[in-house]
Image 1 (cartoon, helix red, strand yellow):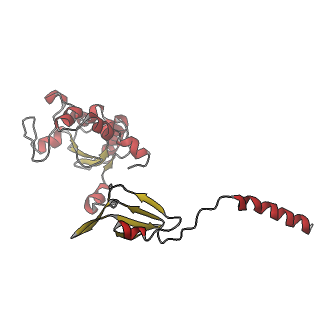
Image 2: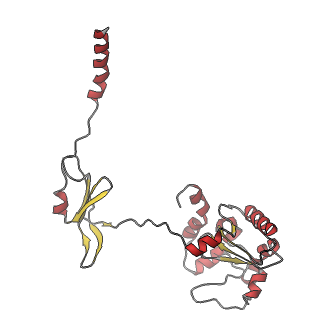
Image 3: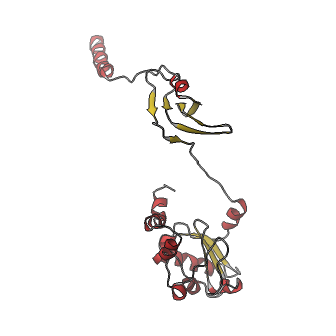
Length: 237
């Protein structure tokens, strides 16, 4: 029995020994990037030629010759060929006051079509009869034909009080007639500095695509922006 066990163990180890073993890294760095333009952000020396990485640690930034000195057998050497390298920008932040207040307001996140947007607005208004305003945020441009909501649509949903809802990105506001009257905004009101009051089709005959083109935004860029909900569902943004 012992002989059989020993033979089985020997047979089991043969495939492991036959496998290709990755070269042992004899240098300090797992990967080096050389021959490029590396942004350092340091006054007086904003650019370097190369950098070295080990694991998740940036070991050194310097000249190509310095960084090559940190490489050894098994180090991955990437020739940048003059290309530019910059640190990644990863941002997660909260506007404390606005974020806190929004928890008490109408949320339109993940409302991917107008039917869902309308149902959510109607339900919130019905369950908050004491609210003097209907306010909230989170609607997506892709939920509306042409990419923009209209005053008339919101009038139909909230006819009894002012309503103002911000888009998911905070760059566009959707107001009903009651809110516009309080703000004294009419069809003849001029645009504020740095912004635009987009009139509805009855007033201007323009869609979001028309406005985007006037601002120099291509159809391709606009289509990508309108596809925000697809990216959000995929966890990309």
